[in-house]
Amino acid sequence: MRQADADTSTIRTARHEARWARVLARIFAALGGRVVLDAQAENSVRLVNPHGLHLWTHRVEVEGVANLAHEIGHLLFADRLDDDHGLDYSRIPYDLSTAFGREVLAEELACCALSCSILAQQHFEEGASLDSTTVRAAVDEWFVEQIEIQPVFYQSKIDLDSFRQLISTFVAVEGGALVRKCDYLYVNLSDWMKRIGAPLEWKIQVRYEVTELWSLYLMKVGIVRVESDTVRSSTP
Image (cartoon, rainbow, N blue to C red; front, side):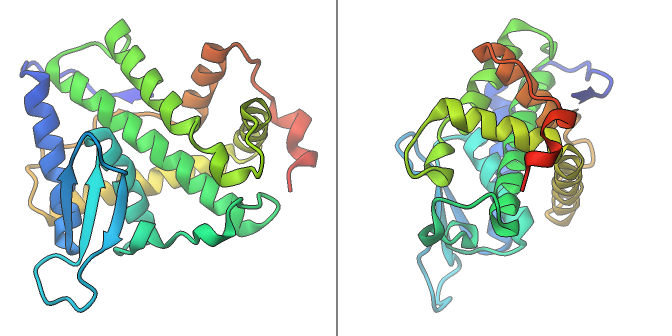
């Protein structure tokens, strides 16, 4: 994780959450998406106006700002609005022996990193230390939630332990590619913020990498991280 110099201003977290909600929603709006924050949302992007007769073509339903940040990541990769970002759910479970399956997982993990960064950014802008228990707990909890719903996309029979091993292998071998995926998201998010007219000082100063988050996750659940030299030959 990289951190810029701390901002001397201190504003209540609720204001920062509202600010980032507005920024991310405006990016979706620029492409015709209407964002709805609802605690009971299913976290989805749905085509609701196929003929473009109204201002909005898609409805983006999310539970909160962290969920919206994750969806923004997928939007940045796709560079267009589409139902569930164009993912073909008929191909579930995705096959990691294929280029398509590996691409889906790499983008998913990069989106997890982006959303963790924006979540931590909100605390950082409040004046909190990124090493504080509060920030670490918030990021850990959010990353765990994102990761532990993923087996349904990659396994016919859900087995979290084997899924963790699968991800460990993937992260160890694909570390460089994952860094490039994250680079792409951070650069393109900054570009979109300029397009929608966000003030220059509104930028992400906190950046997590997938490998960092995954190592922290494994320590949290008590698993030793797989090293790339031992798994490189076994990865598709």
